Length: 251
Image 1: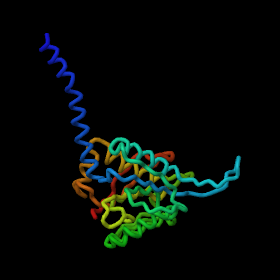
Image 2 (image 1 turned 90 degrees about the horizontal axis):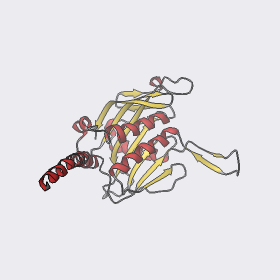
Image 3 (image 1 turned 90 degrees about the vertical axis):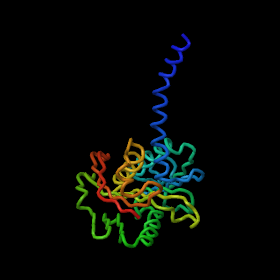
Image 4 (image 1 turned 120 degrees about the horizontal axis):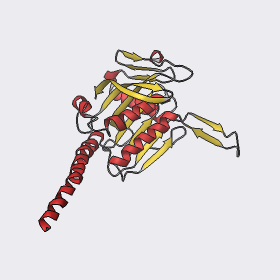
């Protein structure tokens, strides 16, 4: 009877052991790929869409951001909760922010309304001049080498795009001391909806979905790779329906 109970108990452990093993197979490769520092905080700097006076109640100044940035923070938070549970997240609006982000860094939104994104892209383009990267979200144009992506891809109808072009950049944190190993991630589209698509692709489709980054790792490397990815996002009624990788550049 004791032997039978032991066998039944061991059989009951099989699903638990399998789930634990399956989780670890995803956990460690994902952490090595993104390579966020275990000890430092994560600064998330998002676009400031506007600063206006509240039309109701006390006449106070309030800053607003885009829906894509809010959704991007949501995608990021789910990822951090699964793979970096003890990592503190500080979310900032970029306009007027006086901060040296020396820890790990995520930038959500393009350079026209996010000063830190602007400085990041300047530093990135300087260090990787062979890419000839130009990002003009005011003019809705991105140039990489001989490839140009502009408003012709957006198909805007009733104020909403049907498509967007997005950039994801994984790189060192250029604001940190040169001896630091902290990392940065830039996610932005030509519109706010593309920013959501960029964050969805990296933090969900690639880093969280089962086997999501197998093909990408073959192109850019396994441990803390530096790369720039160009994406196409399908937008339906203001929501990201699908994201497709167009091209990737290993740095």
